[in-house]
Image 1 (cartoon, rainbow, N blue to C red):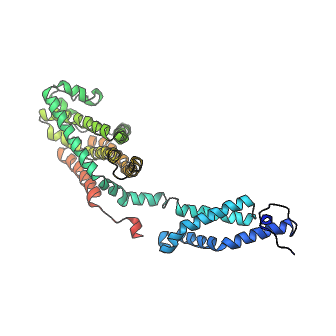
Image 2 (image 1 turned 135 degrees about the horizontal axis):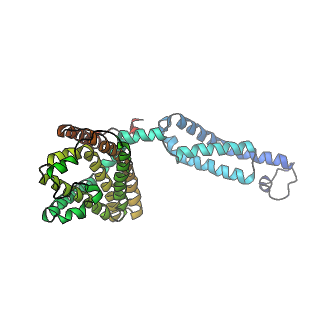
Amino acid sequence: MKAPTISAWFGRGEITAPTDIESAALRSDRFRLEREYDWRRLEDIVARMERGGVRKIDDEELLALPTLYRTAASSLSVARETSLDAATLSYLESLVQRAWFQVYGPRKGLFGWLREFFFGGWSRAVREIWLDVCIALFVMTAGALVGWLLVAQNTDWYYRLVPGGLAGGRVPGASREMLLETIEQENSTGGLSVFAAYLFSNNAGVCILAFALGFAFGIPSLMLLIHNMAMLGAMVWLFAGADLGWEFAAWLSVHGTTELFGILLSGAAGLHIGRSMAFPGTRTILEAASESGRRSAIVMVGVVLMMVVAALLEAFPRQLVGGMESRFVIGGAFLAFWLAYFFLYRPHRLEEEA
């Protein structure tokens, strides 16, 4: 009996022998036998990675994984085009899907990502933008000094720098007793939860804006930092002039060490993107922006969390805790925590430990 031709295997031309059903079965069997070794090898590698990650396979298998995946994907494409048997097609679809997650899919779930974020990822990202943090810190300090000097020269500047809704009774010409009343301890917690939500929304908005403006080479981010700190400098001048400088610093420190730290990081994150775009080095501008954007995004996720903490501190401890010493203790403790976490806490990468 004459053997079937290649055109008969792939359904082209007139098939005389064997029958159509026998020919289709022959095509499927031959297709599977020619590639089955690679499929089984890929399946074995994927199964071990699903049980224990990359550490379950050796270097040779890791290098072979992308090639084996592409081979299986190509086989799946051919199987669909030539209408091979349903069992082979189903097997390949499952195998390619599982392999895709190992080659291109996310390496860890939500809890794994959170673990990596809090136990090293966030602090590492902050340290990687240390130059931008230093620049932002210098700009913020300069902004506070500019606000102080402007108001000291002309009190009209105070009304330009400090919004009326924020100032309240804290305005030039107010008596010492009136200024002291604005930073005194509250007697009840009524409405403070609503106040906390408002503060978080406001503070997070400032931070996100400082970050988002970084695309324009970081200049708008720095200008926003200067404006916010000039407002603070004007208020420090006001309270210091009434001999309430330390009281105001204690009142501000409760939430300010967290809030100002978060604003500092958001400005640095925006500046990091802008500086990378302005000075991409050997990379293209798009590559530089993409790389710095991923790093800055990690920082900003943490900044939002810091704003939640700052809002809670501003709404509750700052309002309910009296005494300059107690307020300084709270603010100093949070400042020490953030400094230690970002610059002293340096765990190994979880991937290296695995």
